[in-house]
Image (cartoon, rainbow, N blue to C red; front, side, top):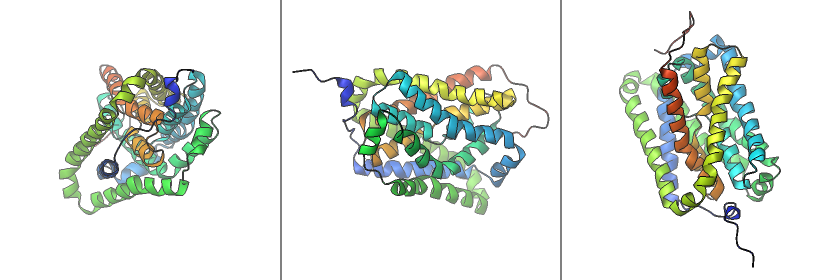
Amino acid sequence: MNPINPMDVMDTVRLNFNPASLMLLNVVLAFLMFGVALDTRKADFMRVFKMPVAFACAILAQFVILPAITFALTLVLDVRPSIALGMILVACCPPGNVSNILTHRAKGNVALSVSMTAVSNALSIFLMPLNFALWAGMHPTAGALFKSISINPVEMLIHIVAIIGVPFVLGIWVAQRWPAFTARFKKPIGTISFVTLGIFIIAAIAGNWKYFITYTGVVILAVAIHDALAFGTGYVCARLFKLSDYDRRAMSIEVGIRNAGLGLVLIFTFFGGLGGMAIVAGVWGWWDIVAGLVLATLWGRNPPVVPDNVETAA
């Protein structure tokens, strides 16, 4: 009798996350998006027209190049199908609002970062499920696994609208309607929701510790390379678009920081906590922030030359 290859188990094992916790995680993520929107202004969207080259670069890097590079990376590394699906899903996720904090630490263009986060999250409501279905569906090894899981794309879209779109629109409306409330509570709301999301990610890992202990060593290499490529994609694209170093720092961090929390929600909701996918998203959730913090700190030691007439964060 042939021994069972532990790597094969990743494509079948299901991580545990009870329905009540999953519901609460959805609420926390929606609250996080609400906090992001409280810090978003009409001017952040209007900045698209003032900096069309930078935003064209951001959209191309996040929604086209990063998923394509991720697709190629899964083939080069020859990872298990469930790991490939997890990597593709994370690549298709919108940026996290921690990118704004890291851009500030890196002494990059925070105003551009805030605007890119707002625009990218708005576009992701519709582009994320389409992008994921496209790249996952045509993957030579993960495609069969993806197609074997019964997923209603309309249901996924509705779910994304509910936890990203609705809180985002509501937050912008509240910020416009009650500016005094917004000024007082936007930072506490953002901090509480971010910390709570971190606790849920830790809880998801702790509740499935034996799987993370067994497979993290395999996954972490793929995540580390993937994350480095994500940061590099933003930087190289910005350089090709002839953006300043000030803007390149913001672009690199914006493309490199992905909302792995959203990925976890979708994995547990639509993929039943599929092992390889959940482990990738869980590892990415902390690795991404640590790597981004290191990069931002190194950049922060060498302030860029800020171009004349550039718009900075208020």
